Length: 295
Image (cartoon, rainbow, N blue to C red; front, side, top):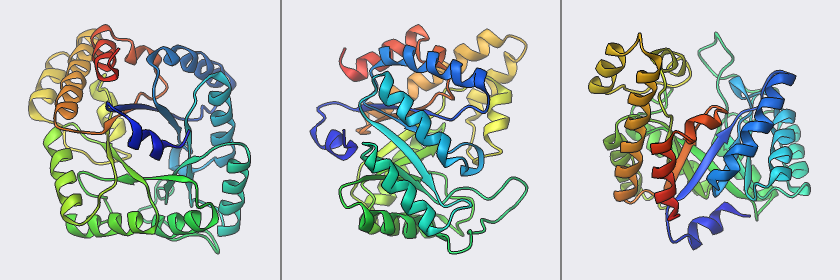
């Protein structure tokens, strides 16, 4: 199902979940089990990343097909510019559409590990804006999502430059925006206000990561920069010798985020579950998501 149509027709906030391609056979088996369990959550759509650094387009499509076969009606593979020419990217999109997918998350991709700046492949796309424009021209009926950075893209000079580039992606043909993770809700609401002031009118879906440990925060901050609220950090540090208590603290924080975001008018919630089904079935979090769904 086209996600744009879901946003337009929904009478409640949408719920989506992100998966990533495992690197091992054991991981693939585990993902199949995880995906089967998460069907109980009844997400409106799911997305599939291209793995660390934005690579591995083939596995992304394979996992997307697996999820479709398992019963997910709306699956959104990610598409990046990393290590691929324009022709290779567009051929992969044609293949994706031929196999029945009508949604894509269009991303430039991150620089390789250890490098500061993105380097396009020979005859490759330099920016996500170029990718979006090419996809819109190539497949006019495709629903295209793009990423937004509530706390600014790390390569942007300032916040307003970042918003300008985001508007260029939307003007090129993007249908909606999913944000990188954030832990302060005011960051999201201020980001939305800046977008609306700049003339960006598409849905802006907040992306949330349920925090389970201090180590998880440290790992995630190597991929994207975000501020950690002092009260949350204080509570996690006080409970660092008690993993179960740390999980409860982080999950309750996420529950509060979801409630406030929905009350504030967010069009839905995108969950970065990191292929962990058990996180969504923490009783209080599952109950919160069920309320969002109206079930």
